[in-house]
Image (tube, rainbow, N blue to C red; front, side):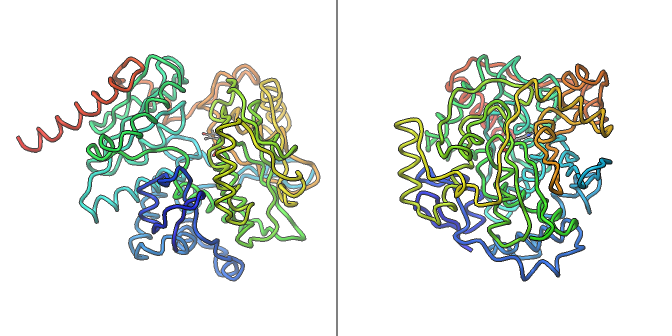
Length: 466
Ligand SMILES: *Cc1c(COP(=O)(O)O)cnc(C)c1O
C-alpha cells in the first residue's frame, strides 16, 4: 500500500510515511485507497484486541513483515492493564436506549492518545533497529500529547524526547507526567511563554532542515498517519462487539479538537463497516461543528476552556477528511488550504452533503461541561472528565450510543470537585506526586531551545566516545 500526500506530492511506504510524519508539500499522508472491510468482519469478530489490530494494520503496513508487525502491536498494548480489551465498553444504567462508555483512558498517561503513541513508539524503535539511524523526538504540548509521546518512546533505547510546554500554564498533574519520568532520555523544556510560543519555536526549528537532520529530530503531533490508523481499531472493536448494522446503528459521540479521533471512526464507514454514525462534539472552540452546520470553515481565536485538549481552532486532521470528501482531488485540497492561509476561511457545499447521513455535530461550553459532569453523575453514578462530559451532553435519546471517554477524571480533579464534591484519584497520578521533578526553564526563543538540544546530544556522543 502506498501513502500519498493530500496535496499531491510524495509517494511513500507505510514505514517511510510514519518516520517522515508530514509530507514535503505541507500536506498530510493518506493511504492511496481505503481497503473494503466487509468481507473480513465475520472472521474478525471475537478476536483479542492485539490480533484485531494486527489484522487491520496489515492491510496498510504492507512493508512490515507480519511477525514484526505482530510484535509491535503486542508490545504497544501490553502496557495497558487489560491488554486483551484495552478499550472497555461500559454499559450505563439508563431507562432509555442503550448507552455505553468506551473508556480510552487506561493507558500509561490516562488519555486516549496512548492508543496511538504507544504504537508509534514501537514503529520508531523498529526503524532504529533496521536502519541503524537514530531518532529523537521534538514537540510542543499543551498537556496530553507531550506525556503520551514521552511514554510512547520510553522503552525505546537511545530515543531522546525534547518536549516544550508553557511554564506555569499546563495542569499541575500534566506537568508531573512530563517531568517525573526519571529517565535520562526525557528532556522537558519549560518555556517562558504561551503554548503558541512553544509551538512556533518547534515549527521554526523544523523549518531548519540541516539542524533537523543533524540531530535526527522527528515531530510528534497529531498528524502522523500511524496515529489515525491506530485509532481506527477501537471503533472497529466496539462495532464488532456491539454488532453495528444499518438496521441497528451505533452512534459514537466523540470529543473533538484536531479532528483526529473522530476521523478514524469515520474512515471505517468509508471502508464499508455498516451502521456507524458519529457526533462530532467540540467545546466552545466550535470551528469544526460550525463547518458541518454551515459549510463554512472559518477558524477564529482559541479560547481556553475546562476541556483544554480540545482548545483548538486549526483542526489539523480536517485536511484528511477534506481529501476523502473531495474523492482524492489533491489539486482542490491544495487550493482550499492556500485559500485558508490567505483569506482565513473557505466554503464548501451544502451541510447535508458534507455530513453524508452519518455525521452530526454539537458543541458544549464550560457551563454545559459543568452541568454535564453533575447530571451524568446524578443519573448514572458515572464520573466523566470535562472532555468526556462534552460528549455526554450531546447524546441523543433515540439511537444506541457510545460515548467516547478520552481522559480519566482524575486528570482534571478541580472540575469534578466543583460539580460533584468528589475528588477522583488514580494510583498512577498519586505516585507521581512523590517523584522528583526534572525540567529546564528556557526563554521563549528558538536559539535557547536549539542550544539545549545540541548540548544534550553532544554530551551523549561524548560519553559514547569516552
Ligand atoms: C487530544 C484530546 C482530545 C481531542 O482529540 P482530537 O484527536 O484532537 O480530536 C479530546 N480529549 C482528550 C482528553 C484529548 O487528550
